[in-house]
Length: 111
Image 1 (cartoon, rainbow, N blue to C red):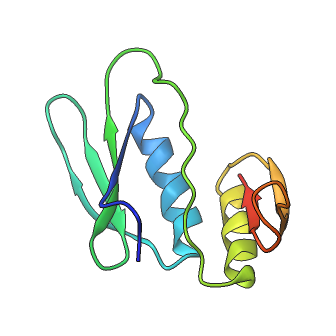
Image 2: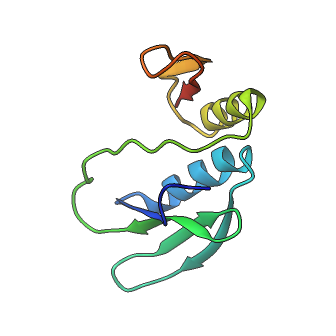
């Protein structure tokens, strides 16, 4: 079970951001569940059973970057997510593997 109810991110490039997350999150079984157009910018929601990630479009300068870690079922799914994220235009910030700085069995990738 997730430790959060939901996360909300803001971006000035909603279309580009939506395309990236649609492609990358599909490898984890996380899908776009809705899109709502609003006067201040659209909002897209992603999740498995319910929306846990909201991404809202905003006007103005780009907000400060954030770090979001998605839970994977197994190491294979981590690799599939990493590959999908790179294909969708993400940057390789670390291939799938053990991250000893967190703990002995922490397996992750960074995109």
